[in-house]
Amino acid sequence: MDLTFLELDMSTDRVDLNLLVYLDALLKERNVTKAAHQLGLSNLP
Image (tube, rainbow, N blue to C red; front, side, top):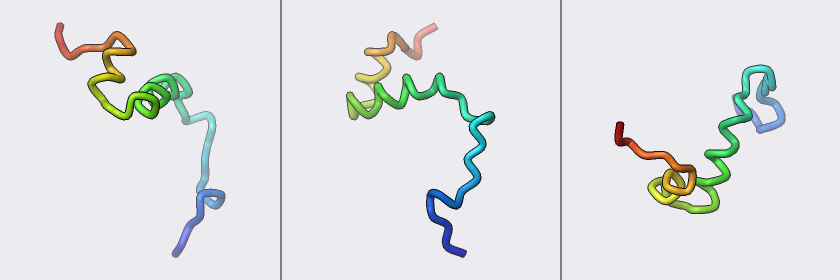
């Protein structure tokens, strides 16, 4: 069964729009480490 993007059930009530901030940083930086730095994130406690 071949599904196109428009045929997928995209329930907006289940989408966390806050994640768009992280996606935006990743797409702009094209590097996970740089995106994390831009967002002020680190893996240090």
